[in-house]
Image (cartoon, rainbow, N blue to C red; front, side):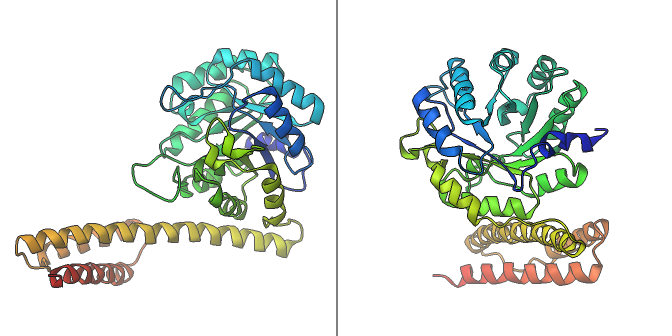
Length: 361
C-alpha cells in the first residue's frame, strides 16, 4: 500500500493522550441495555461505543443479534453521550444501513475476512467513503489474507483504515479461546508500521481473567488501541458472557495498564528497546511451548518403542535430524556450532523422557 502514513490520519485526529479504547457489549440486546452501558462508559477512557447488531454465530440457534433496529439505539447513545459508534458489517446491505444511521466506524469480522469475494463486495459498497474501516484478522493464521483484505479497501479508495487482532482458531487446547499468535501482528507492524493496530483481547481470551495481561502485552508491543467487550451485567449477557467485563472494571484497568510516554530521545530509545524485548519474550514463550509439545511426542515414541522392545537411541534417525537442522540453521543465519549444541540438548531431553517411560513398571 502506498502512502501508508495517511492511514494514521483518522487516529491522530482524536489527539488522545492514551491508546484508543473501543468498548461496549458483545451484542446490543435492548435499547435500555445499550444506553445504560453507554452512559457508564462515557466517563471512562472509552472513545468509541461498540455493539454487535448482526451476530454471525458459529452454529445456528444462538442469539444472532437484534438486526437493523439496533442501529437507531447506537444513534441515540451517540446523541446522549457524545461517543463515536461502531458495529460489524458482513455484506453490502449491512453497509448501506450502517451508513444511513451514521455509524462512525465499521469493522469487518474474522469470518468475513477469510472470503475475498465478500470483502470485495463490502469494499465496493464503501468505495470512496470517509468512514473508518477496521479489518479483523482472518480466523486462521494467514498474514497475506489479512493484508489482502486491507488492500481491497485501500484500492476502493477507503482511506481511513486499521486492523484488529482477535487471535486465531486452533484445534489444540490452549489457555485462550483464540490463540494470539503474536508473531503475525508483529510481522504486520514491521511491514506496515503506520497501519493502526488494535487488540481485541475479549475474543482472544474467551474469559475475563486474562484480558488485562493481553492488553499489557499489546501496549508493550506498541498497539494503537484496545477493543474490549463491556457489559453492565456480564453474567446475564445474551452472548459471550464469560469474556465481558463491567465498565467499572474497564475504568480501573485503563488506570492500571502501563503506557509508555513518548518524547525525549532516551525515552524513545527505551520504548523501542522494550518493544523489541517484548517481541523476544513472545517468541521465547512460543519456543518453550513447542518444546513441551515436542517432548509429548517423544513420550509417545518412547511408549511405542517400549511396547515393541526397540532401543531408545536410533543413531541413523538422530544423524538425519541433526544434518537436516544444520542446513535449516544455515538458511536462518544460525551457526553450525549453535545448532549442534541446541539439538544435542533437545535430543538428550528426549532420551531422558523415554528412559523414564522405560523404567516405569
